[in-house]
Length: 159
Image (tube, helix red, strand yellow):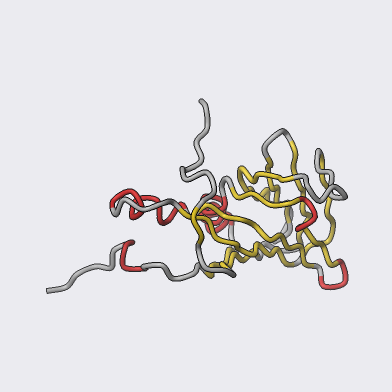
């Protein structure tokens, strides 16, 4: 008998994913929706052409299992890294205020000529970060063990 792998077979292993095209990035965007982070956790290193942010990511991939097993929903700290960054701009982001917590709504890519383009991190409250890149190369890696979401519930949005 040949059984296909199921999503649940992944267990509680940490995520370590990459995106090299717009379709891949949609997956990372879904997994990072509603991630929260202090504004001062964003860092751009121009000499390395790298932008990184340490997120407190809601574990969307575990939501069904948490409900089925009647256990609390979880968050995990994850590192979102964008390489090949040539310019960073932000709007509505006070990076110098350590107690300002931002919420990531989505990540999108607008292609330019050749492989270059713009990655936009859309934030709640009309804020955003715009990354000019020479090529799309983004990674998402869980760096801590999951922990109970402080709210004890999944994020939800009013329509």
